[in-house]
Image (tube, rainbow, N blue to C red; front, side, top):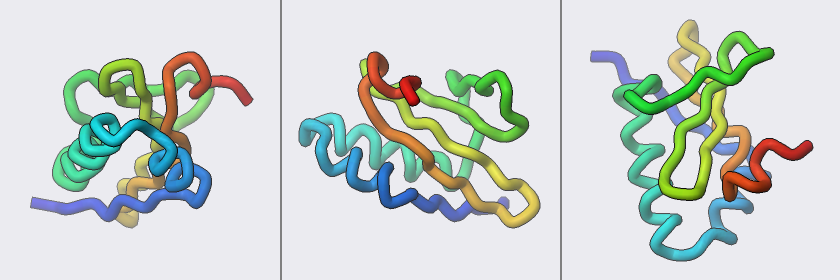
Length: 87
């Protein structure tokens, strides 16, 4: 079984630490699950990108890219559903 390495961008890490404590625990559990299954049920591929996905936990979203050739998951954004897609 292959294991992926999950890497958080600095901005995603800062966003994670600003979330409410119960949500932080849920997101960390979600990220740990991505190590073994990078495309779990419920994840959606984002349009306009070849390897970017999002997964939800309650009202919060985690946007990440999967690089299968090097077994790396790069977490791009973590935030509330109202703000996550704004650029």
